[in-house]
Image (cartoon, rainbow, N blue to C red; front, side):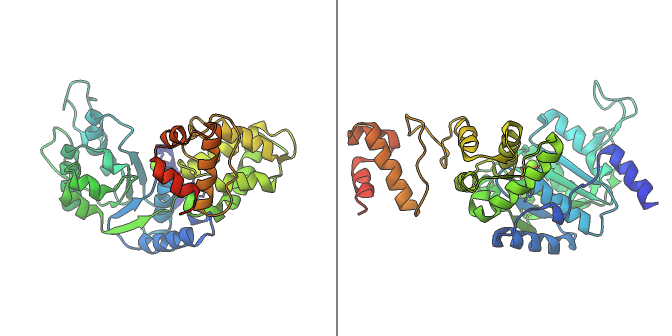
Length: 337
Ligand SMILES: Nc1ncnc2c1ncn2[C@@H]1O[C@H](COP(=O)(O)OP(=O)(O)O)[C@@H](O)[C@H]1O
Ligand SMILES: [Mg+2]
């Protein structure tokens, strides 16, 4: 019985594949997030997951669904940023036959109805217009949806998980996000740490993806050099785990030996658009050499500044301009005052 239901959900794509075991990381930050999430799985209240892009918001939402009381019912994920405004409404709420030109004759079930008894995960909730926000609020409050063109309401019983990579409260202040909806969804909240705040997880993630792509690409690669790992550990990862996975796939595709060498890592990292090792913006440097990212932040900063001064052949005014800081600041930072 359970299997039959799951099979049907699979066909519709409404199954959460991942569990907490699939969330890699041993850092205190990720452990704490997992612990909190496991507790939240047992509570039916709305949950707001905050995290930069690629930090695993959807992964966590799936894991939460899969250990909670609704695990044998649908998990419906929807990315609010991926669909144009005019389609958003009919996707979420559905419509009745003949509701508008181009509508299917038999009408269409919205995602809320499809998620009935399960979980609905609305990714990037910060992207929706205030009109749709108003409609969402009504659904959340009344637990009923009205299809477009319909005069009756349908009861829906769903657990709501939403996510955002924006500071929603800032959006509330700027009147881009309804305050009432904000309070409605922000009952439980979970913050996912960016990779650069849990660098100790990088080696684990790297090994995880080596194993994954070794199988997928049928490669013999068994590992990566220590220096290679260090380069990856020191990078800022603005795209977080998603970006790390992408880089690991590229490294695995290109690796010719049975381990990934540091020279290959350096080459791939240096080819990222606008990136040099360890920095988000590489346009400070004219040449291709990387700065050793050792020591504390001040030391690293000092090395960068010295390097730029060198490149500007000692012209401090030019160096300051390129770095976007004042000459006095530059002097102070170089002389550690
Ligand atoms: N801690 C993690 N361990 C393993 N894979 C992860 C982890 N965090 C994210 N991922 C993977 O990275 C990719 C992006 O995750 P996703 O949940 O879509 O991020 P977000 O929704 O925050 O942008 C997915 O392929 C996901 O499986
Ligand atoms: Mg996402």
